[in-house]
Image (cartoon, rainbow, N blue to C red; front, top):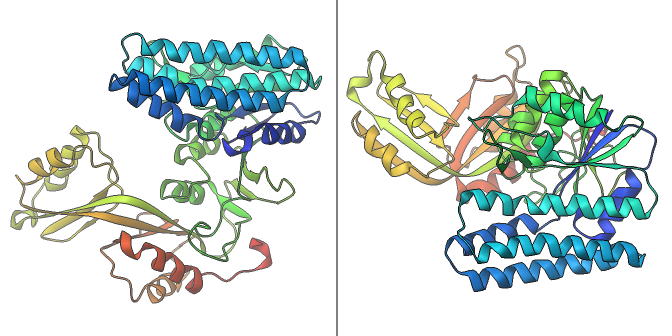
Length: 443
């Protein structure tokens, strides 16, 4: 069985949904995981914000606008009056449900239910279209088997057991449609895997089903060697290892959710990145093997805050680093990069929600300096000790860019550099010109 995940742009219109339906028409057993239509989750977030602020009239206006958008999609998607009527009733039910929150108390629990509507709508509309085209398929409700535990981590045993139970109810069927992103939490409430979580859903489902391959279909032909939105003349990478892909995803490559590699890696299931707009393109295959040259790709992660703690007491001070890390642990704030010297430690975070509280506690250890509007540039490849010259290429390319921090040696797949965000475009461009040798293997 294969798992095929289609992102928001891939199902962002009636035309795109029809294209996806044509892509999945073969005899291979598969589970198709769909995101919400592009723009829907953002619209639902805006609606939730208005509801939280008791701006119910403004919320209703946003709900009406989104409802109108879906009416237009349904009108274009179906040809038979019966399916158009069925879709109209579906939309009325869902949007009346959302409107009901303008009349009652709105909390975080209701917000999660509202955010789930995008995936519920996209899968139902797509299933209706398959029925109209006489394509046998089964709609599997993700809320019946996707679950997170009290730590907001996937309950993999529950997912595997209940997915298997769902599939066993439909023996003989080869095509299944389900929702990405949404799940239930430990209390049985509707919840989600956070933004970009549909990739994560696909990987978790693939691991639970012991799939032979997981395919992530987006609007770009694989993972590129650099950010194609910023840099010219980028190219898709033919092959990556799980570790290389995970580094790129975490440090800014938008094509893949950072968490989605891990479940596939655990079961050694290949992940293939493909383009719905160019289905003939080879894309990128991610496996347990690392192949090719030392430097594979570059990614950039914005909104980074750098924190330096200087302390004369740090020299040979047993437990100093542990005390520093415990501050971040108390505020559940992960650290991206860290460098140390005899008198100082510098580190970076990408979540500044508790920055003031963290800085206040760190000042107990010494002088604290904070730099915001920083960017981590991540150079990914196979930097094994026996291979020389990679660092030279990188630093020659960036010789005119001020470097705030450098992290090298913690992973054989990653060299990370911290720079001012204002230097990001120039840094990515210089790296693109200075460290890559384009060849047919990467074309």
